[in-house]
Length: 249
Image: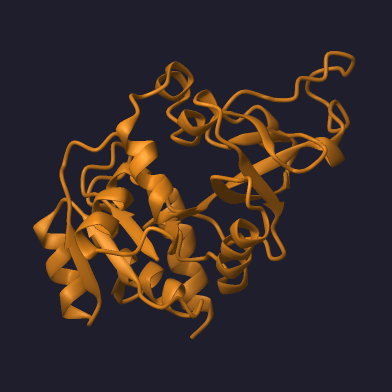
């Protein structure tokens, strides 16, 4: 498993090093990843301070270039440097997801094993609140009948034109899925992914998985067996997750 972690987050600079009830966020995420039973967990970063922190708690860090367009590009460089075999499966767990359930990590990897026509495996879950439908920070996914992705978007998709706005029943909630930002790939596919130029929808939506769809690759999207805890994108998210860890004492 590879955890991409960069220092220069636009909304929360230095995010991987932020304290979460006595431990840096990257350590919290690393410990979550280690509970999945992965053969190895590596933090791929472009920042020496992050690498030093990972080393300090006994983790493994891999220095990567600072110019990568996406977390997948960073993971691909780390995989190449580590020297993983082409047929190995690597899971990309974002460094700000300490609440990712270990069984969901294993589930996404298994989806890739079971779907040989898929280049990528990922996960989704139901929306929890009506406001999430219009929230651009909540990425939605539309799938086909076999659970392969048709499109990912920050926009409210699929769009239900027959429903009235600003009412809780304005969309068919059973049909809306929130994308969960965890991915599994074969190492051989990562070389293919990174050799391609950024796709126009990827640039517009700032969603790296759209590069795979643009070039005709298939993404299998499972329904998460366990819903993950919240990720950390903003200071409010950070404070919320700090309170969650404090409540577990």
